Figure 1 (spheres, rainbow, N blue to C red):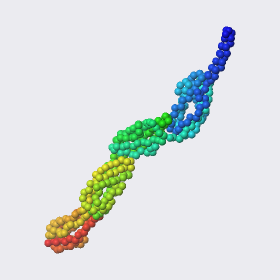
Figure 2: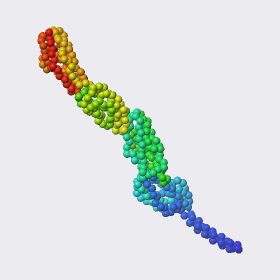
Figure 3: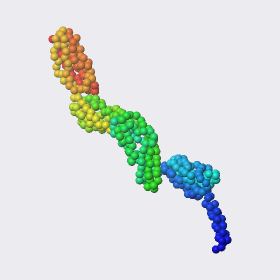
Figure 4: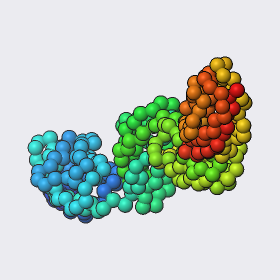
Length: 378
């Protein structure tokens, strides 16, 4: 090959190389005609956009349209941009992006983001109330998209003192130490079977009520008289649901704690009471129900009185519930009177004779007993 021919070939190659170099240097996106980006609400997106040619640095900007709510555009390095965030609204979003180089040359491409409905969400709607000093446990649920891994955390606010959330399963547990309401946001991030991260956040308010205290006693009852009493408690989150064992024959307890029925046997009955409050907290307590014998006047006679001398005699009774009220019909000796709350006849009789009268006693539950008595005054 002659030197002249070599020079001609070299000149052609240089020209062709310049042409190809000019093509390679054309500023543009790496993907000049990108496919729609298909994502869903709650998807953790990190979508990289590469650029080439031109002079560095490159800068990608939005020319028209908008990104889906929850997503933002940023520049990662001299030739890479990033659309990142968590979309919050489904729909189709079109946005024109332009890449500009150091000499302000630019290239434009349309990007489409197709956002479908959420497939992974916190399903819990509300949290049951807790009780200070009582163990608490509640498990959050998330779905419906299958996940190989999920992480739970509190991202704003705080749990009540004494409680914590398990990052692996979303269980809130512990023993709250103070009363009051705490508002906080729970966030879960799940790694789906398709390799994509999905997340959801929800705000909750957890109320911690005062500790439940059950009354240790109930009002006394009486054989043959309908029960007028109920189990009671303070604290917790009303309403309460009650159950009980050890009740006397003839007596039952309703779910609201009301004792009902007519006792058939006297005695002291230890009742094992159990309650569940509206938040699921429980409390066990021992309560004693005392059933008195049926009220009855047992006195058959009264000791004789002497004219002008002090006299005092209590009319004997059995059973009944305190809060007695006595009345008398007929004529007591002049100078004597019946104590309406004590059932005691007292005073100084003014004249001798035999006196017949009827006494009646009524107790706090309404039981009554009547007896005809005779009192001699000498």
